[in-house]
Image (cartoon, rainbow, N blue to C red; front, top):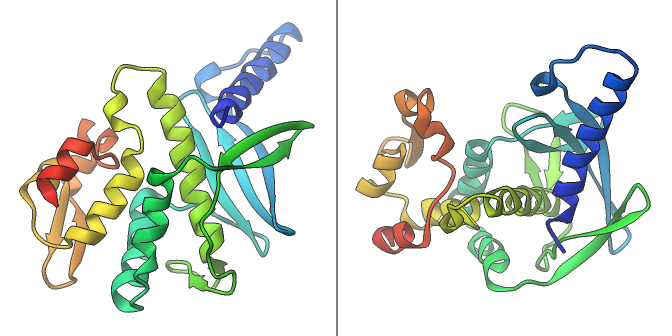
Length: 228
């Protein structure tokens, strides 16, 4: 099962907390963080990611050249927008839709156990991307594997609740933002405002500081149908 990795690393965090409690240490369980490194071998290329697990979520970030590269969804959107519109890489949409349109998986090992993540499409391994406000470059494969890991994680957490319409919602949002790229009432309601001077979306700062922040990264199929 593809989502078992996120489930098990959350359980790993709980076990660490229990072990500390048995030793008499007093812990703030919500603030306790587990950090580790994940390595995924794809066709002989090792992709390294950091994992950070707290009481609320699981975070992935790219490890490259001694740097920890943490990208928020908005950061990822800006990188994809630049690739799509400035560098005319129209395959970006195909790579996002690839996640939605098939369920093929690749395996990786973590602490001696085999897990699965969504398979990557065929991506030119030589395509380099400059990370925002940094001299570090990552590959397009590293970026999309990060996106797929984040979406897999999100799908697992969503499956624990009732709002299953948000399954695949992050990738759906990224794809729709790129395709629409104009003022849209539905996107504005969620918190995405189109900047006509910059020609891309900015986040509504008021919404970003409110409860809407939890909602801004997700788009349902119905909302997508209203926008596109």
